[in-house]
Amino acid sequence: MTKKATADKKDLLKKVQAVAEAVAGKKAKDIKAYNVSGLTLIADAFVLCTANSEPQLKAVANAARESVREAGYHVLRVEGDQRSGWLVIDFGDVILHVFRNQARVFYDLDRMWGDAPEIVLNLDTE
Image (cartoon, helix red, strand yellow):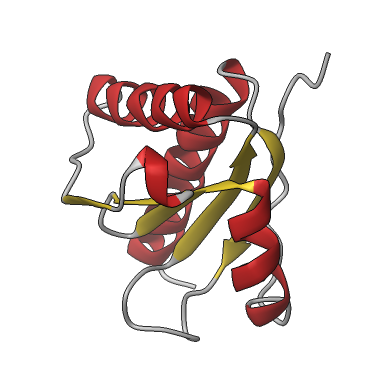
């Protein structure tokens, strides 16, 4: 692995961790991250989490956007809304999926991307 590739991987992991910490701070549940580089062209990592209500879904998404901006990264696009049960936030190489429980079960991205290596997150789960 070249120095640039190592630096890029560290930056990716830093961004994934920032997203995961932000959603955990708003009490999102079942937070998972997958390294999808080489499996899709749209991103290098997916972060998935579940919110218990529409207001929480909105709060989780807002916290992630704010945290990533504060870390110096950009928000490229947001799709969906809290009423749909699924918000997608595109941070470029990292995409955050915030689901209500029913939508997460229905779309089952955890199974779809189950062959992708899971990224270990360091989250305080108290």
